[in-house]
Structure formats: structure tokens, C-alpha cells
Image (cartoon, rainbow, N blue to C red; front, side):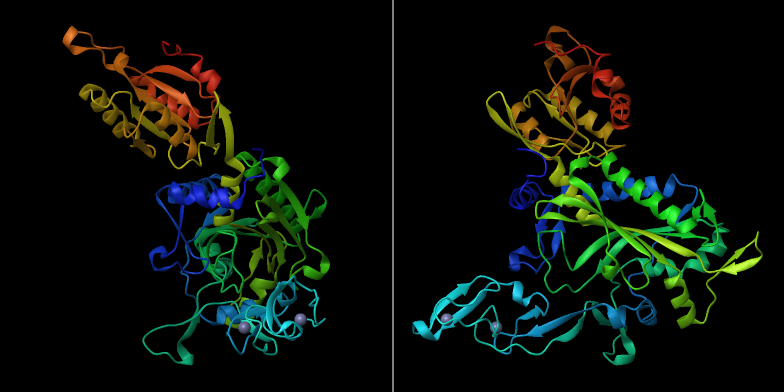
Length: 497
Ligand SMILES: [Zn+2]
Ligand SMILES: [Zn+2]
């Protein structure tokens, strides 16, 4: 199967079968568009966040991180514009009470009880008229019976109450984006860290949007995780002869694209999409999306927006606090511009899985393999005993697992024959398997001590090398740090066939 052709059904099924993603509250029939990350999913997700944080926060001298609370002062959402503008126009069915986006309702197939055919029920394609009576849809497309209300603006923020009293004064919201916390903490971070422009504030965390039509597995959900950066620049500075905000916007587009390529997304499945003038948020100077060819088609993987000085000015206005930066050279206070690279963790995870999924034929048999980048792979090493009835082999395998597990997620598995065990690890993307066999431990009854070497098998090539147990951790470290397999394996003998 070629890249980009992985279907969503295949990913959903693999995710459930192998413990990546489960439907939330499944035993109660599930919760709409909520998903739970299972034992392997949580590792994959943590790895994505960890490498993002390492590459964009730890390794950069111009970046710091925060971890803000999800509940914020309600005025934050007034200042940010979310209270007034973060809305979709909705219509409700008076009969079945279903709710639809007013601008999407004509794009749905509709249910029709046709008077011209004694009230027979038909499902008619979106936008088409009934072939028998010629009527077009006016009623609820789902039940075909109820009238729809006039459109009403529906805010996408989850509303809740602070404290025990459900009254208007206690109303607050679950944050619909992590970004606002970076703006309201701008001065705290600036003063405490003594930063100079340009610098960024990064945060990874949960956000909530009461989407009317979520769906497509973990692509669009009501509760999701974001990795966002607000990169502040001095609008009066010029870099390479260009305004600093424009220069940094391009730099961030390049850096984000390079990041997805580095962790394994195929270049053919990535593209940039410039927002048209009429789809730009009113405060945005320019926005570019990185799109990925998901199983549902080209869709947004992340967005990189130039939000100008809109957010800092708004929060300054509503809070009455000055949110400026003192430009030492020009001896003046300026409101920085901000470039915002914003990525969704769940979407990134879906893209990495879709891109890594392969079905290959190996010696006449189908092999499913997730060719995940080793740094993202949920399990780094699986330690497998060749004979589970030999105590010395099992003991050695357990000891190796315990030793490697000081550094990585490592599993031990003896529940099937070796071929099966390899296939299971391939399917979840484990880059290296280590097998312990008779040669490793020798035969104590005959006074043999064994060669104290194990076989490492590399997932993609399925090639193997015999490595001394004493060197194993170093070899794994070298491989995970990016050393090519042939170069490392070349130093060791192949297993005896
Ligand atoms: Zn209805
Ligand atoms: Zn009809």
C-alpha cells in the first residue's frame, strides 16, 4: 500500500486493536467525538510533545515555556474576541431537536416523506429536488418532519461555573485555545526572565471547542491538545531588509515544515496554503496553513499566523495594564507583533500514524508495519526470549529489559513464537527487537557460558546483528540518536543461521 492511501478505517481499527486510541466511555456506548489514548497512544503522544518541546523550547535560546491553567478570568475571552465572535450560526429542528450549522445544512443528504408516493420515505442527495414531487428541502434533513428554526449564533466555548453557585457572576469558560495565556502572561514572563525581543513563549496543553460537527476520528474533537508558540518581535526592526514580523513569519513556516519532515512525514503529503484575504481573521496580517494529505483529504495540520499587536493591545485595553516592551536602542515603548505557530497534537499524531502505516509482503506473507520515526515510536525496544521454557534465557531477557527501561519504554514479550512477536512489534512501530537465545546464555549443564551476545533486529530492513549485552544500551542510544543502521550493524557479526 502506498503512502497517503491509508484509510481512516484501517487506522481506527489498528488504534483500537493495539491500544493507541479507544472511544471514550465505550462501555456506555461512547461519548460523541471524545477519544481516550491507550497504553501505546499515550507514549506516542508524549513523544510528539517531548520532541516538540525539546526542539522548539529547550534547544532555542530565544524561547521559554509556560503551563497555564485552563480556567481563566472571563474577561480574557471578552478581550480576545471569543465571547462575541467565536460562534457558528445554528438552526434547530423543532421536532427531533437536532442542531445543524446553518451554512452546512444544504450540504447534507435529506430525508423526505413524499406525498406523491403515498408518503414513502426517500433519502435525497444534497441540494437535489425530489424526483417524484419536485419539492426541495425545507424541513429537517435528518428526520424529514420538523421545521428548522431561524439561525442563531452559537458560541463554541464550553461554559461552566466557578464555585458552588450557578449564577451569571460565576460563569467562566474552558479555554478554546492556549494562546491567550501567553498574552496575559507577557509582562510576567518578560520581567521575570529579562528577555530581549525577539523571543517566544511556548505552551502545550488542552483546549476545548464545542464543535457542532466534530468527527473523522481524532481529526476534529471537542477536547484536544495544542502545541502553541507566541513569538514576539519588534515591529520597528528590520531583518534582511524586511520588517521583522514578516521575516520571522517566513522563518517559522520553514522551521515547522522542516520539523514535520524530520519526524517522518513524506514531502509529497505536505503542502502550504496561504489564507485568502477574505478568510483571514480581522487582526491577522497573513496566515499560512501547513496542510497534510490525511485519509479524509488535504486538511490543516497546523497554522502559522501573524497576529500583529492585536492581542497585546486588546488585553492592555481590557485589563488597564501596559503590555509593552522598552526598546533600549530607540528609547521607546513598543507593542510587539506576534507570530503564532499553532499545532494540534492529536492531528499531528494522526498524520504521523497515517504516514507511517505500510502493508508489505514478506516471503509471501502480509506484514503490517508502522515506520514511525524511532523517537516517536511508543516502544523503543522489545526484548524477546527465543525459548520461554529456559529459565536462564528468560532471566537474562528480563534483566536486559530492566536495564534498558532505565532510559526508554522497553517491553518483554514471550507470549508467542518469535515470528509472531516480531510482527506484533512491527505493527506498533517498535524500531528494535532484541532476542535472547541459547547462544547468548550457553548450556550450563555442559559448562558452557554462552557468548553473552543478543540479536538486534531493525524494523524497516529486518536485518539483524549480534551485539554484546554489555554494549547494548550504547548501541541503542547511538541508533536512537540517528546513526544509520548499516553503519552500526556493520561493526557486529550477523547471527549464525
Ligand atoms: Zn428533525
Ligand atoms: Zn417528493
